[in-house]
Length: 171
Image (tube, rainbow, N blue to C red):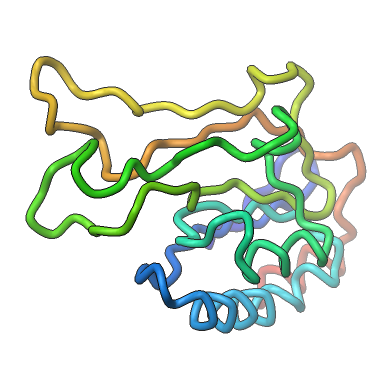
């Protein structure tokens, strides 16, 4: 995690990598509940949050539903009205390595926002996939076995109170 101050506003940046077997949806849901419980005290103090990474959970999984039910916003869905078709190209495509997951292709990577953080204006260009093409002439060489996702974000105009600031750095 990283706690950053942007123009007087605190933002908590959290990177996620949840359990990967395709049949482990309940495990990922439990992991997500633990992460959210860990984040709870800071979230209750009004600190904006950016949570991103490899959730290994598609948009139909309980983990995804939990986040949307709690008010978290997916940047790609905000910008495009839907999640990307694929963020992990699956076995037999993209990066080739002996340790690569053999799961089918799917959308598992997200940037989620909560609190006083929002997607910057810009329509579809404000959130895009990247690194979805091979590096150079080698069809097996990619930056990662997953595609990247970036978003232009804006921190709200509110300011974090001294008490919230002090408490957030105690966590």
